[in-house]
Length: 337
Ligand SMILES: [Zn+2]
Ligand SMILES: [Zn+2]
Image (cartoon, rainbow, N blue to C red):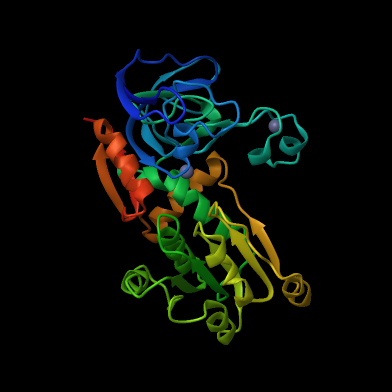
């Protein structure tokens, strides 16, 4: 089979021939049809994840078809369309797992494209607990980006505690933000999109945002306070300064949820938190059932990522495009012929 691997940390993405993998106990083999490229694939390419081994095939936004099943797999059948996302397994017996916090497994957190070879390939094997069923209404290239960018925004919003009618601000209109706006609107929030410049305004409106704040021209915190303050700010940007500028827009009991892995630190005035009982928290993806529900909700509400499609053999080019920040808005590798 053809696969795109990284031979060592910081090596280029290289198209290679490999043996088609055989699923072991509890695993299935997937004929990959599409795989999204995510910023977190840089953790694989640059070898930043602790303990990662090389060569490694990246890819945790996978859509495909089950093609072979190992022993001891229940509930899945050959020919079934499935997706695989970031979270692909946990031990089930550590303290986090026993509390249901599988994402924070302390013993054997398994991540697709990092702990084992991911979806930049014609075939991959995955643990059955990582599988999400793909509804018929979604094509493979539509489903793929929902497996990470989709679940991250959908699952954070639905677990944020915000209620229908609340003001929810989406900071940043990019790979995550353009999905977050759509989810927020369809969940019934008064959705405010915040981005720099006016060029994203029309897009934000088309995605359903009720209001747009150009943070170059307006103070986003002050504008949110004019609306009564945001119950939730979902920060999808990767810039600590841009995040800090919106903190003051939280309403009483407001939450500031961080999704973007910013390089600079976030400066939070303690009195802001204390006086309005406000909070700052992060959110991290979800498990396979969350992925499956992301896909279902996307069908129900007519939500799709905006994508640029590249064939598998042009993975390196697609990766550079994604990392350049110029892609509108997710890059998806089409693997199937
Ligand atoms: Zn991702
Ligand atoms: Zn565990």
